[in-house]
Length: 224
Image (cartoon, rainbow, N blue to C red; front, side, top):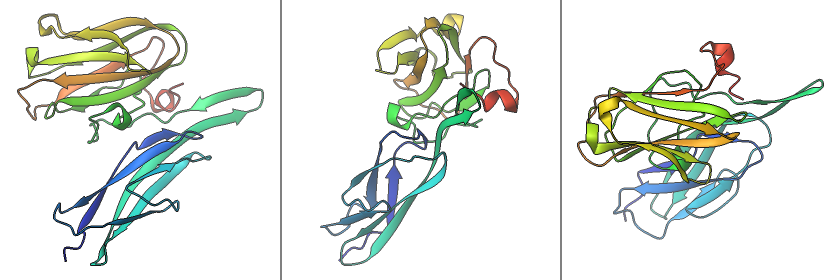
């Protein structure tokens, strides 16, 4: 009888309060004896569970997996942001992704690192096919995404999507640098670095430019 030795919890780590977010457990080794019983810290059962928070703060998603031979526990730290109400003013308090390095896994839009703070330089490695990030545009206006030090060169693409994952812009020509400029409505946007082949661990740099944004901690904590 092979007991579960470990559990990996997959799902978003920076979320908005009031929304529902799905987390999935993966058990190893693959030779673990089935059937498996999954019990989550919110009372849900099954391999996946939906979580929602009403108050901004830091939370831990916990799942316990048993099979009669033993048990294993998986955890994932989650940070939730939400609306801060001030006298006569309502503002969104979105703690930006601190960086400066990416956090894996960020291979899908659901796992995207963010929100990126405008003007801050982030570092990541093109060691798999996709790195996803996201940012918020508070009001309609111009925005630019820049990437440099990207070693795979013509084997890659810099892609900008809207919240519905429609392509807004794409750059696959390294000869003039990697950059996408667009006039964007207010909303959420995804940045994808796609590497077809030639994976390496040499880091590239990524930055989102939104007019009027500074680089201080105060600016970074007000990414609305």
